Structure formats: structure tokens, C-alpha cells
Image (cartoon, rainbow, N blue to C red):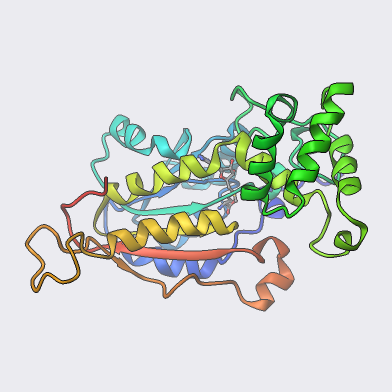
Length: 324
Ligand SMILES: C[S@@+](CC[C@H](N)C(=O)[O-])C[C@H]1O[C@@H](n2cnc3c(N)ncnc32)[C@H](O)[C@@H]1O
């Protein structure tokens, strides 16, 4: 049997573009790059190779990812520091490492192919597994806890908002009815319930009918959007002058949070009709991407996971004026 290596298990998305956006900030002695979502270390490996003066701080909330990335990046020992953390803990992590400012930070959001492939973690709708979905298995709430305890209204809200599921109310009502007979434990029962709740005509489009429900539960289990809302301003605040931030999202709500955070920094905080911007109120970011950049058709054909990727980037142009 061949054991898959990390590079077989997760193909880094928009790799060359991400490196081109961040590398200009990392080509000097002592440059520090934070990979906030280390995963299997695919992007980080390219940075360590192409930016020989940079030191990497790699964060992940999943201890399994940290272990595999650590093995992959062993040839760069001495230029790497790995930390088990949720990325909104960045200020504390930098404090503990005595790093006052960073030159680059990458967020490649969502789950890795490794997490989707490990059936027993319950991320995948196509395999029967315990309904877990925690990226960090020491976290308290699983997908089963949410299904078995949330009200129908709360379930419908998360399915609609995080899964963009048109039949959210129908599915939520069925979940509540089904759990009265027996609590949810496994993914196959949920997949089947969702398929049955969706009208036949709607089942033909949009991929597997349970895909949106599973995505919504994963986002809720891991508090993904609240964490991102806290993390991005903190990341921008940690950037040194000319430091760069790159964010790759896979969901419209992630992309909206990113767009708003970067746009707020790229705009002065005084009213538009003031003739002169007072000192200290100039924008502190400059956008490096026009709107969101997308992968090429060739990349999507080779790596379907790239299909929904959107990249935004900015650079710090003023030292003071931290975001709230
Ligand atoms: C898409 S993968 C990253 C893949 C990586 N860029 C590569 O090339 O191998 C996302 C990773 O981020 C981690 N992650 C997701 N949300 C996180 C958070 N809030 N804090 C820390 N890590 C997070 C996941 O556990 C996963 O390993």
C-alpha cells in the first residue's frame, strides 16, 4: 500500500499568485511570514523555498495538520515555528514569541482535503461517520450537539446563512421531528433526511443535496465567521510597514468579511467632504487586488477544490492607526 504524502493529499490553491502577492514583503533578512492556516504546509513550503530569508510561523487549530506539515517542512528546521492555535489568537501568539510585527500573513480558509478525506471526522456527506466536524477535536461542540439541541429557527438560520440553502426551513423542521424519535449520531441519516426534504426537481442542480447543510454545520461548529471577523483586523494591526496580507476565501460570507476589512483600511476614516485628510487619518492599507481574483479555468479543471476560491490582498502603507 502506498501511504499518501501531504502533497498528494492537498493541492495548494492559486499557489503562484499567492506567492507573487506576498513574496515582495519577505525578501529581506529577518522577514516573518505567518501562515494562519498551515494545513498540510503546501503554501508554506513554496514560501520557504522561494523566500530564503523568511522565517515561518505556522498556525493551525488542527493538531493532525500541524504534525503532517511539521514532517513535510522538516528540511527547513531552524526557519519554522509551529503553534497550535485558532488564528484569532495571533496577537497572543506573537506576544509569546516576542515578535513585535510581521511582514506577511496568509489565510487559506476552510477545511483541507485531508480533513475531508478522513471519514471519521464527519466533514464529508458522502461517507457515513459520526457527526463531529470539529477542526480541533478538543473543542466542546460537535455537529451532532447542534442538530440535537438547536431550535428549528436557529437551525433554519444557519442553513440559510452559512449554507445558502433555499429549503432551510423544511430541512430544519424535519431535523427537529426526526430527533424526537432518535437523536442524530451519524452523517448518513442526515444526508438521507436532507435529500428527502428537497423537492425532486431541485435535486438535479447544485451538486449533492446535503453539501450545503454539511457546510453550514461545519461553519457553525467551528465558529468560522466570528473567528474570521476578529482575526482579520488583528492580522492587519500586526503588519509592519509594507507588510502584506493575502486572504483566500471559499464562501461568499468569508469573502464579504475580507472585502469589508481590507476596504475599511484602504479608506480614510474622516468624512468624504473634508478638503484635506488630517494627519493620522490617512488610509493605512493599499489594496493589491482589484476586486477578488479567481483561479484560471485550467487550475479548476485540475483541482476542483479551487473552483470557489477568491483572493484579496493588501499592503500596509502607514504605521500608526490601528483598526478597532
Ligand atoms: C484549506 S486548509 C490550508 C491548506 C494549506 N494552505 C496548504 O497548502 O496545505 C485550511 C487549514 O486551516 C485550518 N483552520 C481553519 N480555520 C482555522 C482557524 N480559525 N484557526 C487556525 N486554523 C484554522 C484547518 O484546520 C486547515 O488545516
